[in-house]
Length: 425
Image (cartoon, rainbow, N blue to C red; front, side, top):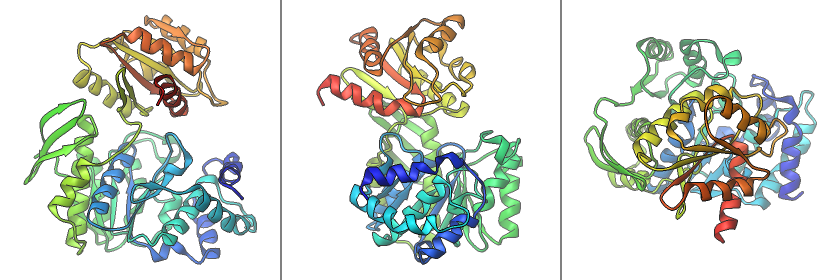
């Protein structure tokens, strides 16, 4: 089996979709000798900010000299991004070898695992083979019944910012969603949470008290932005002053505050992490596809946000970083998304839209999206291909403008590839 065959096999069970429950994952891991029981974890749930929080945490742990695994989803450009050790993505050969090992075990099960369950099991085996000291593990969806929740008590269980997403599975109020996410809280462990409404925080307090957990709330009160530009931001948090962060946006400062609480909880438990490690880890973190400047000439920004909270953060970033610039939005979307709501807050802030068709069976055709935007009062140009879309957007932006690419995650890889081809990178 090669990497292409491995990924094809993993995707072949996609039709099952998401079926909550831990049984299938537990069965497969037992057949594999339970690799997850030989690893230590920081376990991260939440609606938004999970990936950024995970990336910052992993970067700091790596600077502290720990061999650090990172498990995230979805991927932006390449499947291998989903599992990394010390910032290096899993090699194709190793992905193929581990998938070949897991496949007959999965095929022998009475009820086959879902795609995410299969990927999680492959990741656990990978991190064990790589002799990771600690793994930063991002939840796929929810908490209690997510396949990552087969792990025993993590070093820290984390909940980032929550909102109303996947309400049909997770609950129709933020309090119910908080309770579902807090399913990752385990007896006698440490919990770190993003600050929420009093009713949401009450959910965390109640569950932590029932499970005899130490609850650490992120320190938002002392957060202070010192400066920011398109190269990054400088901020204070508590006694830590002049911290540098290349990730842009006010929401990333809140995520960084969560990370600092995670690190403090780890230090309390004996992990050896210095203030220098923290500074270097934040300064050098990389998290592609989140208000990510992929080119400075022309100025070209890619943002993978696609739910209401992400769009809210995107709007604030446009106001904070792109004030006075000619902003051209390069975008494509899936037909089953609430794209009417998604584009409405952005419309007053962009000069015009360039529409492309995402390379996905659920795509909305570029012409249809352009018509929708026209009807809503925006200027929009449909393009026949993603390459045409990139060229058109750059041309419309002009010398002092900016191309802002957002919408469907499925377009982002092809857009970046087309841009690099045009620029000769």
